[in-house]
Amino acid sequence: MSSERHLTSFVAILACAALASCAQVEDPCKTKSRVVADDKYCDKYWECDNGQSVQYDCPNGLVFAGKHRGVTEGCDYPWRSNYCEYPKVQINPPIGTEHCDWLYGIFGHETSCTRYWTCWNGTATEQLCIGGLLYNENAHSCDWPENVDGCQKHPLCNEDPNGNVPLGKSCNRYWQCQGGYPRLQRCPAMLVFDRRSLRCVVPPTEECDVPTTTAPPPEEEENRPRVQHQSKRPSQGFSEQSRPPPRN
Image (cartoon, rainbow, N blue to C red):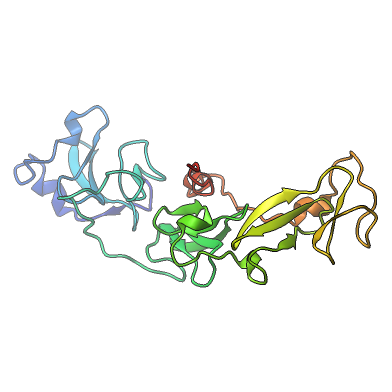
């Protein structure tokens, strides 16, 4: 068994050996999965251990989702589904660390509308919303700015809510602010983006020569903001988080 799981009490083995005091909890030793949810607490579950029914806690901040489900050990974020609907409740209190309200979860950034934190076992990793999106704390994902209360204007458009902003060292792509919301744009064929006039012009400019059909220089890609993806743990949820919902 994983070292991250916490055995709540050895007494649970005796108390529920015959399921006398846990009549509403299905005996995991009689099920195919050998694991069942607790009937009262969504952050606890029962597992068959050497023929005995033993109660375990989900990692702090997660709730039981089912065997082979969720982000780890059958546990998932409580807002992902109806894992913790009334009358079930989370019984374990939050354990907070820097930037993390719980040891596991996704949390808004303290000072930025375009960034957020993914927390895994109390370790926070800063993530970035790309493509002009902002972090929506209600949806736990990056979203269109007009859907994010309290953060309607994007930092890229602070100087001019309807102006243009250079994109890294790109010669033909730029941000176009529309009412404070940035939209990625590309200059028409054979034109380049002029950083002084902030518009598409006939080349050359100080930074850009006549456009070619070759691939963009590496520095252009390097200057594009990226979301950090992790190989397993939070990332299988976080890759989903970086996608905004479809626009109506």
